[in-house]
Image: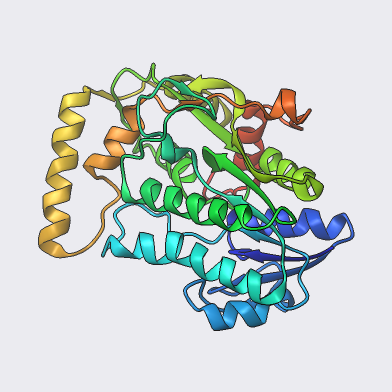
Amino acid sequence: MDIVITGGSGFIGTHLVRLLLDEGHAVRIYDKRPSEAFPDLVTLGDVRDEGAMTSALQGADVVYHLAAEHHDDVRPVSRYYEVNSGGAEKLVAACEANGVNRIIFTSTAAVYGLDEGEADESTPVTPFNDYGKSKLQAERVFLDWAKVDTGRSLFMVRPVVVFGEGNTANVYNLIMQIAGGRFIMVGSGENRKSMAYVGNLVPLLAQVLGRDSQGEIVNYADKPDLSVGETVKVIRDELGQSGTPLRRLPYWLGMLGGYGFDALARVRNRAYAISSIRIKKFCANTQVATRVFDDLDFKAPYSLEEGLRRMIASLPSEES
């Protein structure tokens, strides 16, 4: 198949490109950033640019839509909607212009909000932040597109936090804080978080390439879920820190510090690694159930613990 991956220069996209190429597909990347791994496959462009995307999709059989504005504390918040839901509108227009009838969209489990229990695909969606709200809007754009023509195929995956080799987001930052002796456990650490290893998520995305659907939605998380304390223990053990004491901070005091950094960020007009929303997310139960292992007969190649160890092993020695 001739495949275009929006956001293909990013963390998940790079792993997906590599796997699809290994499977013999023709793959192109549409991204606002160059690809370090596949520079010759990239067409530079923004998902907000309908004309550029229409040109980039010429000849495509399928589009994986990974491009998104996902970082915490993006300002102005309107950028979430311009890129995520607005980008979805531009993409479906580009698909219609080129007769592309197959889209695979990576949404997010953030559409369920915080502390919603172990949300499954039927759980009411109650996103708590603009990222989740804008991704939910994007889902609805794609569902409307799919309903127009029974010949169109739409498959949507709602991943939880994804980590792995090449990741520089939440799990990477956690590893770096622990490795550098800067980590403080806020709260009890008993809250559980669903996570996904990129080495498992990407094979699922490749597996559903030929699955016909007019709006099927599946969560993705590797099971069983680990508590924050269990995740920290795996990382500390792998880094040789199992014998050192773990510093702790009560939740209320952590949130107080987060609000302080929020105020400082507003005054100085810059983002900080600590914020109230990050503390809240860190201490919340964020779990999802998923039917991919039963209904799609998917077999994850690695356990969560193996994924964490593989990620740590991939880091340069000065980092890990």
